[in-house]
Length: 196
Picture 1 (tube, rainbow, N blue to C red):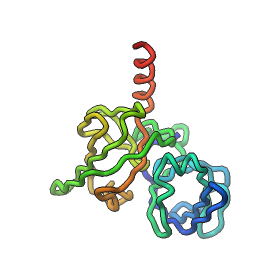
Picture 2: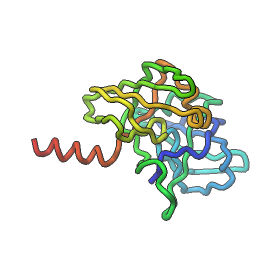
Picture 3: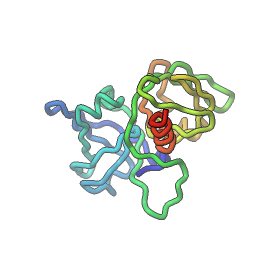
Picture 4: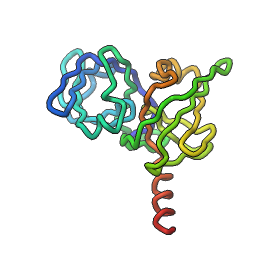
């Protein structure tokens, strides 16, 4: 369980293909504190620490994860949003995030708003996911509030702190991002579909 509040940006230090899997070496500010078997969200994807040394740690993404997320597009030196699992008793500063990416979206616009930014994204609505204005959405692991919503598209507003301390500053028109839709909204949509 995560909150969508990014703790650190990590840097991809190693990429190793093994069959359909990819092992990622990642360095970040809390690398030394991690333990093998610990869960960490990487651009919103929950992955297990499988090895570590004094410089970085390793996680493995299987084929299903690579197909459903933007992790397959990462290259050496890329920055990735990181969040460790939530501790019981912590404040829930973002929203309930599972670390299970539902699908990807593509950035279609970035508008500078004199101190903040509006990002617009499009996604395939045929998968059954929806957004609502002022609802919650997770983009690359970042808990955000939807500004406006339409069929298969939505926008979010990014403040300077988020722009500087997540990989939002590297998102441009055409960039693929990971989406996790609000878990409560997903259950409501599924129940509504079942009663039609």
